[in-house]
Image (cartoon, rainbow, N blue to C red; front, side, top):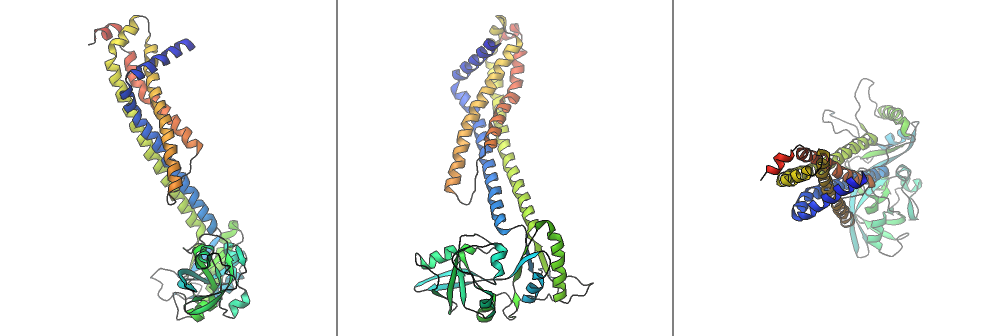
Length: 407
């Protein structure tokens, strides 16, 4: 049995070696298909991981209170610090921070750079779990006294001060001096598009009164939104209901009237984004699989041509004792060998492309996985069996007399 299988494999390799150019062109479709599958799955997996890391920084237990964008609400009330204070009393709320996002030029000496400024209070550090690298947070007393203090993001501090210790030094925002009291560690984005690394924090009172920050600068109590951290994700719906009731009370909304505010659940957005990411990964995998399918059809076409060209050889082998099963196995072995060779080359090419993309492009995340490589190799072998069976079956059905007569 082993000898028969060995001899068939040896004959298959000889037949492939006899037509090197044809074998190379036949395998090319499999090479491209396997490389495409590995690269596509790596990009899809990398994108999913990148999104998961980004979302984990935002936190699935974060809520955003803001004015609604629904034009049907004619006179929505401003979100104010009274809403923040009421929300903090709701059971299940870990922290709630005012949020006013704007941008200013920050100057120090001859250096000036545009920086995103988040006007907030001390609860923002608990809400986003931002960590300090140097100095301290501003205090609630400084918030209440409209203090001109600032906490810089890691990249902002490096840009402005280079190797100089920023803590205790004074920068200028909108012609107003601010004392640097702290520098944050690298934290990344904190949701709603604010990048802490490239930004800075000031007390919201200072921003509203002394710098007119916020979309509604005419109302000194108006906030852009409130960022809320829920203690337990499992009770988020109950906590949301409590927050809605608290804000309805501060806004004096009639029990039968609609809300004049919007409470966004970031967890639902995360799930939608993850679903979109999975769909994209599946789509990329399907594109790669289609490439592999096209390569398999190429294998079948070439094998059918090979059967036609080698009809006389088939007749001679059958005349000297080869069975239909031997002929079928020989041509099937050739198809599988071609597919496997193409698959191995495709793996090398796919891994190479993925590593190149991962090391040279920060905008296209790519992550190799063993299962995607095994899947691709398995697919290439399965492609050889599937598309090689019909040519092998056709060859095995030839009779010795008809095959020997074929010119």
